[in-house]
Length: 62
Image (tube, rainbow, N blue to C red):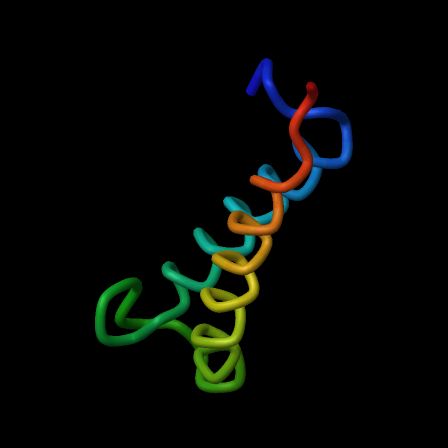
């Protein structure tokens, strides 16, 4: 993380957090007893987390 600037670090850690929450709420691969309204948010959270991780690659120091 030394190579990223402040925006890149923010995007990276937010992406990791969203990916982990989405992974945990997924009923097929994560927690099996997740409430029904929250399990529908699992796939969008995983996708948004991955997009933020990829986007953070573009915010590097020179």
